[in-house]
Image 1 (cartoon, helix red, strand yellow):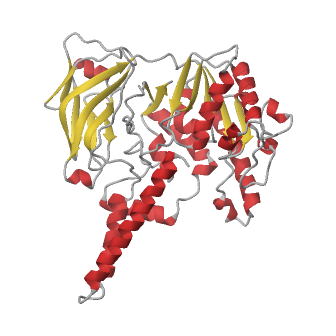
Image 2 (image 1 turned 135 degrees about the vertical axis):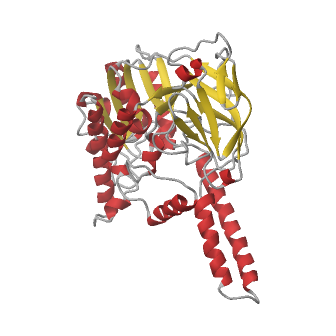
Length: 466
């Protein structure tokens, strides 16, 4: 069981215990008073839970984030006075550097009910949002603010929070990742777009390699009258199509879009027994070739269609030698807990072993987190602050790339073409969002209902140099 699954199980167990205790209290209140009082209190308690306590947050908002950065990372001296952030005299910032500002943020009482955020003004206006009830060290992303900061015009203002103490600034020299030959490794269709649409749409040459068909959890298609096997196969075929077709929106040639057709949530089993085929959990298939029919050329795994780890490695080696990417973008091995994402990372590193061609840069991304399902917090179009992180023994090297408004819109349209992001959310989730809109001031995304339209369409794309 993954750490994320363990945290979810513990969260649900604690919630059940809390509900049982609340029920006991309500029943005791109902003895000797109006019979309807416990019912009213139960409804009010449920509304309060949905408005303010339904987030999956597996740490205290009072915990400090615990980042460490590589040795010799530049630390330009800055001071925050009367809301204005100033560099020391004579400090010059590198063009295009990723700028990360650490400071303490403490929510006001209202910030326990409405998301606290820091407003950046004087340059590129931005809003970066943090946990309700925050009271600890956090890391703002100032990567677009270098001109305003150099002029001494950058202002920081807390909404529903206060900014405390003396801040610390880090400046990370940008690696040469734009206008390169880029290969994005996507465990599932839409992972490449969620993480790196802006990067790969600006690349001199881009390749999109999707490892799995993503065929499971096909309940939306069963509603159309299909049985579970038919629904899973239809979903897999649609997502295979998406993985080939949607990158064309960004100008990626069809010849550079490849779907490997392995089966969702089976990569870990494949890795554990490299020569043993692992069939689909729901599609009744043990042959990957149904989902590889749109590929522009044959790969080693097409010989027998066996869903094995050895075939996956052979496919990846063939693609790496054919594309010779200078930059590989792949899931981060510690930030992103999805088992297919972790296995995708390991497969690429294993495939690179002993190859004549090696990339100059590896960039990690995180489309999911262990500790906070809502990250990046805040609204679509806003900036991305650093995520929660509590392992100072492992230095992290952030790389923030800007995405202008026109690029954000194109990214949103690419996500809208993905079939997996199109179905409506369950009624309970839509009701929760309505309650949070009314009571907690949260808004959705104008681009689409799925939560990824809010989380992924931002003014930055955030990566980690590996």
